[in-house]
Amino acid sequence: MVASETAASEPAAARDGGVLAAIYRYPVKGMSAEALTAVMLSPGAALPFDRAYAIENGPGAFDPEEPRHLPKIHFVMLMRNDQLAALKTRFDEITHTLTLSWDGDELVHGDLRTAEGRAAIEAGIARTVTSGVRGPPRIVSSPGHTFSDVDAKCVHIVNLESVRALEAKMGVAVNPLRFRPNVIIDGVPAWSEFDCVGSQLRIGAATLEVFSRTERCAATNVDPVTAARDLKLPSFLSRSFGHTDFGVYARVIEGGEISLGDPIKHVA
Image (cartoon, rainbow, N blue to C red; front, side, top):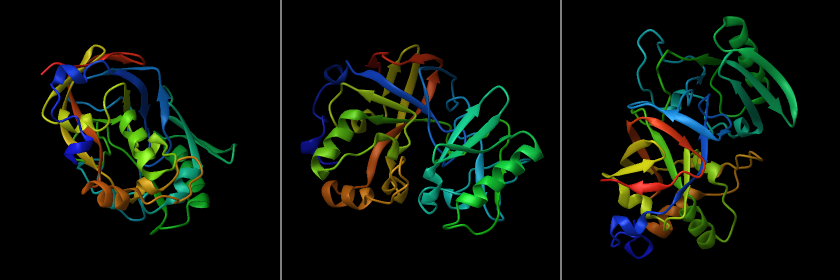
């Protein structure tokens, strides 16, 4: 973190006043975001259905009977499988039906709870994602398990002012979805989210404790709309700021509903 480009010296109260600008979940790890207008958060949990499913990249080590956190290298992911970004998804949480679209046309749909439905989705992925694969894709899940990049059930927060500051420094537009946020906040100083590590934020009816900055990987180099690998964000962050962090992780410690437009407030 570069001191001249953070609000580290400001009291917490000076950084209040932001709002919740966007909410996203990713039902299948590595696949497209789904925008929400509101969501109920539960203590110690991720957003409902966020990264509830993943795609093993060939023969894998995930055991649904004894689920454990595995590094993302075990799964189809944007860092190596940029074609994944060209597949757009729609997930029905009632039926667990995932619909894949390619270039605006529906490719396939299937109920991820059934062998037949998973096989249909796996076949659709195999036809369209051919780079960086080590074998046939396999949809995996386990009740209550979350396929996060970190070994914690958490919410990923990105500050829109930090995105704007990065755009200004790079001289190009940067889609915030490159950073795979669950929550986008706006109206607080750029980079001030880093100063929240170890503190608590109140968003709507929920309280979250920020526990870590987010180290970025090459997945952010892929445009989430075009699937083009057109930026080198981690290396730019490293050269410009001396680190590759962007965004923060937070645990839900008090549950409740959060909605677009909710105020952001430091509580501890």
